[in-house]
Length: 537
Image (cartoon, rainbow, N blue to C red; front, side, top):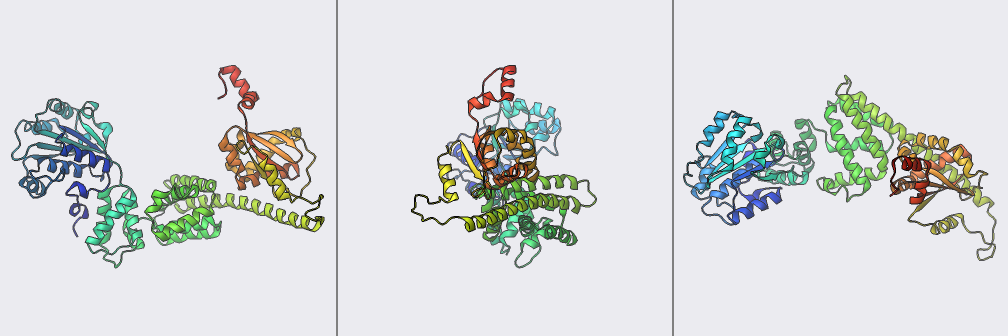
C-alpha cells in the first residue's frame, strides 16, 4: 500500500488544511506579483513547510495561473510535479552541511532560469548548515539576482543566524488541531474505501501530535490491518496507544471512589499487555480535558469537538461528578507517577500509589460531607418534632430558619461577602465563644480544616477571624478568588466541620475580602511597609 502522505500531498493552495493565515498571505503576494527574494518557513515536523515551499515555487513559475493557484497543466507545472524542472533546486541541508556544497549550489544562482520566470532554491532543514555555509550564503542573500527566490525550511529556528532571519519573510507554522487531522484522515479513508471508526481516526490524530505527515503515515500503517471496519481497539494494537474507552474506564472508577475496582482495572490492563508507560501520558491528556470540562463545556470546546458524541457525553458526565479541585489533585498524583515510572521495575506500582492517594483523600472528604449531612438531617427531624405550632398569620408566627438565613444574606453586601452555613445551624444554639476564643484557637482550626482538605491551605494562609456576633463568625481574606474558594459548598462544609470539632459548636461563616485600609492595618503588612516603603494597592 502506497504511503498516504505522498499520494495526498496538496497540489494546490486550496488543498491545504490549516495554516490559513500563511496560505492567505502567500496567495495575496502571488496575485499582486510581489514575490519576495527569500522566505523562511519554521515550525514542527509534518506541518507543511516543504509542501508550502513547493506550492509557492509552482505558482511563481506557472504560465497559466488562476488567481494564485497553479494550473497544473502548463509545461512548468508538469516539470515541477515530475521533479524534472531545472528551475527548482531542492537542497537537503541535513546531508549537505559543508561550505563547499553550499558554494557549489550558489555558483548556479547567477544563471538565468531555463523556462520559468524564477529560479527557486528550497533549502530543507536549513538549521543544519555550518557557520561557513551560512557565511557563504549570506552574501548571496544580501544581493540576490532578480530571478532568484530562496525558501528556507527549519524545525529549529533558534539555530538559524539572526542575520539570515532578518533578510527573510518569516512564517511560523503551527501544529494541526486534532479536528483538522481527523477531517483530512476521514477524506483519505473515504477515497481509499477504508472502513474505520471515528474513534480510531481520533486515536491516530492524537498519536500524530499535530503533524499532518505523521497522521497520514500512521493511517497507512493502520490500513494494513484490512479489518472491516478498523476499530479503536485495532488501531491501539498497531500504534501502542491507549484507547479512549480504557481512559474513560479508569476515570469513571476514580469518580465513583471505587478503590478496589480502580486497582483491579490497572492490574487487568497490565495482564492484557497494555503499555503502562504510554497509558499514563494518555491518561494525563484525558484528565486535562476533564479539568477544562469541569470548569465549563465551553472551556473544553476545542477538545470536545474531536470526540464522538458518545465519548463526549461520557467525558462530560465524569467531569460533572468530580470537583475541579479534585481533578487537579489527581493530575498531580499521576504526574508524579509518570516521573517515577521511568526508574521503576514495577510500572504498575506508581500508578497504584497515585490511585490510592487520590481515592484515600477523596474518601475522607466524602465521608466528612456524608457525616455532616446525617447530622443535618437528624437535627432537622428534631426541630420538626419540637417546633411549636403557631398560625402562620399570627404575630408570633415562627419564621422558618432557611427563610431567615436568606433574609440575613440579602442584607449583606454580596460584592464583598459570601455567607455559608454549617449543617444544622438553623436549629443550633449559639455557643458561648468570643472573637478572642476564635483567635486563640485559630491555628488549631486551620490545621483541622487543611487535614480534611489539603487544597484549602493556600486560601486559608492569609485568612483571619474578623468578627464574632452570636454564632456567626466573619473571616477576612485578602483576595476575591480566596473568598470564592472558601465559599464553595464542599469547602464551606469542611471549614464548618473544623469549627465544630475545635469549638464544639455549630457556627455560621461569612467570608469577606479585606478592604485596602484593613490590609494596611494588618501587622505583617504594616511591618513590610515600614521596612520597604510603598502603599497597599
